[in-house]
Every structure is written in C-alpha cells, then in structure tokens.
Image 1 (cartoon, rainbow, N blue to C red):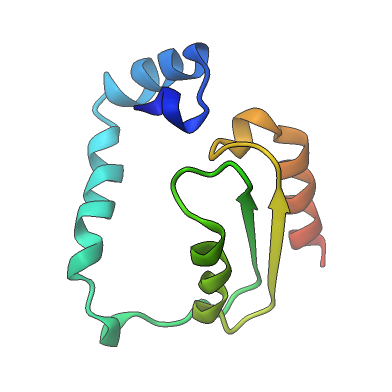
Image 2: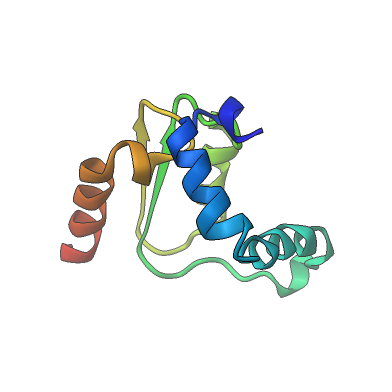
Length: 106
C-alpha cells in the first residue's frame, strides 16, 4: 500500500523496521480510528500559528480538503503547495526545514 503513495522501497523498509515491527503503528492507527467518534462540540479551532504544507501528489488528502483545513484555524495560517508525494519530510527535508524555521521565526 505504501508504494502506491510514493514511498520508495527503502522508505517502506524503514517504516516496517522502525514503526510496524516495533508496534509503534498501533498508536497512530488508533488516532485515526477515534476520529469518527470525536463530537464536533468538543473540537476547538487551532489558535496557534499554523503552516499547512500540501503536495500535488498527496494520495491521502486532495487539495480541496487541504484548503478546507483553514476553516479550523483561527490563528495565523499559511497554506503552502509543493510538488511531491505525501512523504515531504523524506523527499524534501530542506523545504520542510525552511518552512518550519520560517514559521517559528515569525
């Protein structure tokens, strides 16, 4: 499945060794499993400065969904579009680092 999202064979092997085989995946999957049970009354808008980086090749979330995330943020918000797949930190670490540094510097 991960190969279809743009992950390379080496990245898949790393995920298997560091996340799947170590049982760390359970916590992440449980977060997604709990999402349908989160009542909107208990969800509060994000008030802190937020930068959302979306990629044109993201198989997990389309552009419309990414753009709509701004509705849940009341603090300073920045939407960045980059090319690549869902795996930005692995594919473009320099870009991700620059965006993080830019956000925390301002």
